[in-house]
Image 1 (cartoon, rainbow, N blue to C red):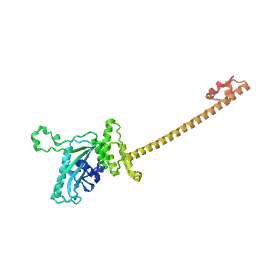
Image 2 (tube, one colour):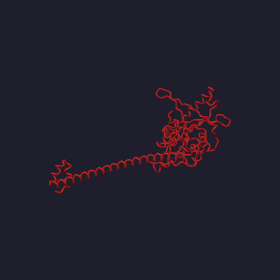
Image 3 (tube, helix red, strand yellow):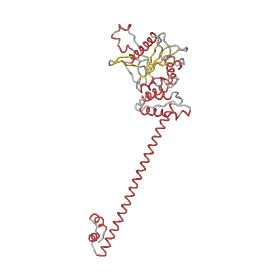
Image 4 (cartoon, rainbow, N blue to C red):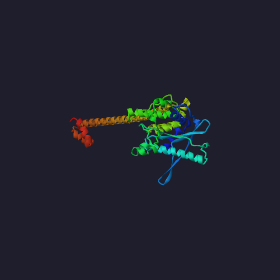
Length: 347
């Protein structure tokens, strides 16, 4: 199982988050199921591929107990970022696996990992949680097998339809009513979808200011796994490395405070880079100014030397009655320097 698979499941592995989704989807958000009624299951579905046996796990699966601690029903959540047209078959296979697992527990009088034996079959329900922008219409087995070509089989074939939830299309009211950190994930998906519709290249996310995050690490890990924004993902992991030092002293973390921190850090990094750039720019200006000063000093020295040479040649011409060329010869001026001095000499 890849690290990304694990992080996608992180938040749903928190019992109160799992219970909140069960209540939202099965009981119209009434607080029927509590976190202490959740018992997680890791049940592999075996299948053969390339002549070898492989394990296929549902994303997150849990048994729900009644108030007396007896097995009541099983719920599985399958996370999907992209649409998969074969998902009804996959979901059907997951359901089969759950019932085969129960059969094994009952026939062999095995005990579940949490020491609760099964004496009868209990119902199983699988929800596909789709986080993508595009609405995904729930497909049934009938849609895949095209029974319209064989209508006589319809009474004998089960038209299994998967339970699909398009998270990004949930209403603001529904998202706000969620009694767990999962509303952070749902709100992010919904905001990105709406924002991308207005500006496909620059979707914006404005986190609610009042929603405190109960399970910071699991929430941000899950958000990072689902986000296609590489910079946001990196920033969230950087935040996770140091969030203890940042917000816990302030009495609670909100998604707004996380984003503010990330933006503040980004600004500070920009400010630091900007200061360094300005320092380098000033240093270059200083070096150029020093170079100009050296050139000016050199030009001044050359002008003084030429002036003295012209005066020396002019005096020699006046004293000895020489021509300009004769004076330059007598003073030993080379051809290059002679060309500079001669225009200033008056015979």
